[in-house]
Each structure stands twice: as structure tokens, then as C-alpha cells.
Image 1 (cartoon, rainbow, N blue to C red):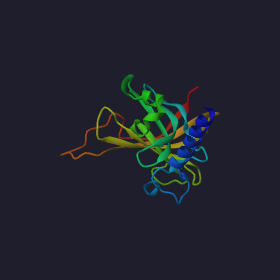
Image 2: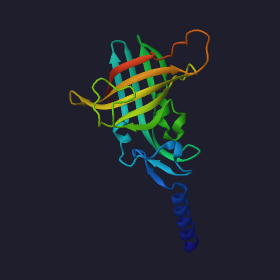
Image 3: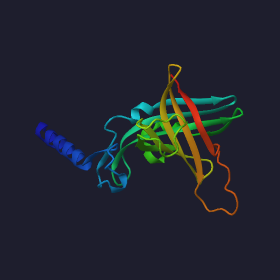
Image 4: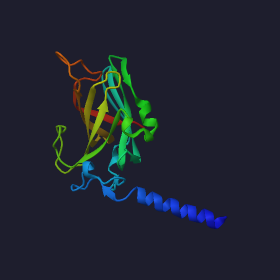
Amino acid sequence: MKKIISIIAIGLIFYNCKAQSPVLNMEDANVTKSKAPDNSYYKDVNNTLNNFEGTWLYTNGNTSLKIILVKSTQYFNGDFYEDLLIGGYQYIENRVEKINTLSDANDPSIGRAASIRGNNIYNNCRYSPVDDCVDGEKNLDLSINDVPLEGHIGTLRLFKRTINGQEALKANISMNYFRDVSGPAPDPTLPWRMDNIVLIKQN
């Protein structure tokens, strides 16, 4: 019986390694997800995504934005495995809650179905940088969905900071509308743009 169990265990280990091969460093400039071989593993080798995990809060008077981010490892997107940062957010405007998807952070397995998700790591100040960006610093480009209003998908750019001794994120959010409309696009739940906002890490 022990021999059978050992054979099964070895087989499962072999299958798992084969199912996630090759392992590709997502920060390698020569690696692009669009060309990743089937069943490869697009891995956060340097654990850069870990630095952005947590609960983060921006406040401005009676308006606030809370974001919760967690790391999802070895998520299979149908073509290959990848490490992702996923999560949700709560936006309150003039003390009225406009949207709350924080529960998305409770289940890392939902992967790219989360209202916030992505793993694009940059080390330059291209693509909508914050005003104090420095070339060479690692920063993130994530997607953010406006769940109540279908068609609005935004870009969430995150830069790690320390402000007054506290861990923080400096962020730019830019919402877009991806449906054909006659006339102006409907406003998203979030503002169309939020530039250089500071989110403080919560304990």
C-alpha cells in the first residue's frame, strides 16, 4: 500500500512540475505574456507584488477610497499560470458609499474576475506616472472595474512610498469607457481621474 501511495505522490509531483513549465520571470524584459508558452508559469520571482499587499486608505474630507490588495499565486488563466495582485475597493463620496467590492480580496482564487487585478511591473516613469516618479523604481499597473456600471474599466497606477514614517501608496486612477455611445459617455462611479492621491497602509 505504501508503495502505491509513493508512486501516486511522485506522479503528482511530476505532473505539477510539467503543468507549470517553463517558469518565466514576469520582470524579465524579454518575456511577454502574449508570447508565453501554454502551461508556463509567469512568476513574481522577486516578490515585487508582495510590497503592494494590504489595506490602503485615501481620505479627503468626507470622501474616501479604500483598497485591499492580496497576492494570488499560480492562477491559471486558461493559457498559462501567473502570479497576480487582486483585490477590491470601497469609494465613499460626501459620506455616501458609491461602490464596495472589498469582498473580492477575500478569495484570491477569483483571479482576473476581481474588480482590481493585474501584474504589470514597470521600472520607469512611463504610462501615467505620479508627479514624484523616479526612473528605476518599481511600480504597478493594474486594472480597476466599475462594477455597477458595465463598460467602465480604469487604469490603477501604484507607486510605493513612505510618508511621515508610514507605508503608503501614491496612485493615479484613470477611468475609460469601452462601449459605443451616441453623445458623451456616462460618468463612472469613481471620478474619471484621481491624480497623485496618497493611500496610507492600515494596520
